[in-house]
Length: 400
Image 1 (cartoon, rainbow, N blue to C red):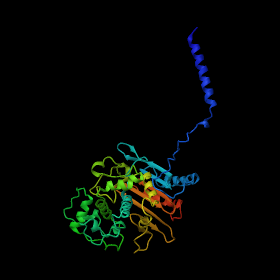
Image 2: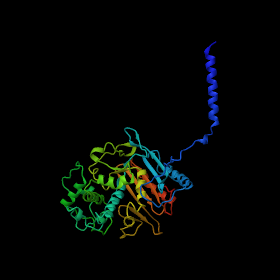
Image 3: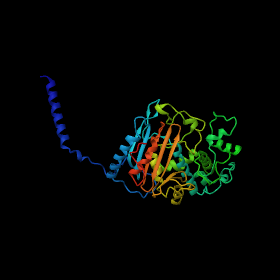
């Protein structure tokens, strides 16, 4: 008798028995041990106490649909390379990532891809200054010369650097006043201070008389940070801001050693933007981060454990009222203040092909973050999403 029919018969019996056993075990009978904690991957937290309420699933679902519709029509089109994230109380309502961090290697942008924040970096520089005020290492009303003796303008204070009321000239325009300017030299923050000292350029306005947005202010603030901490700006930011908040994908670029490793900057059609002589200057720019890490930073602005409430209040109020208008500036943060009483805080950024938008709705505990490494102004449209979460005078369906 052949052994094959017997083997087939035995296999059939075993298979039938196995299937019956599987069918007898209900799918929902899976037991999860009590010590296992199911983590909500869409909830971002920080190690500081926060008086923020959980966000309901119904609320998140409703808002996600509205944000998604706006995103698909206004921002996340086929030519977009970047990210958008909207969160309330740390709960991610919407996030999406498109395009390439490096087009040549086809490295896609993901939730851990750090993009250049451009001038949104100023928000963090200002926060570190306030942390040092809290530690009694800096006085907001103290003269800059106290910390930087070579600084040539006697009346400029730390506060007027922060709120752009110093009247300092723009470092990007020094070449207009200096004969034989070397356009190939990569400038440092120390170079900017040295040029101010050597040439004593005329102020654009007397100290604290007029708002004039100027990157030189924040290059000087970075030097003050280094002077009082006795550490590099990058080290101080990492130790006082990034590490405490768990911003593990955020860093200040080491221009000499990292410029080929970081996400690249592009013109349209992924044409590489390249670098220029101002790319090594930091404080006003040069922080790379992700939307999820920026949510952690935003959560910290609601914590008095991270920074005292009175210092947050100093940062969030306006300082420039010599002209009537909606726009104002605090300490490292832009403000829109409407006559109807609404207000919001934000900062936009642009550097080469990178654009960024950080909008924080303090009354509604919402944060809206848009980043791109391929030049577009679509990132600035993200602020209009404020209208979905509070009484803000934006039109979601306008033609812009």
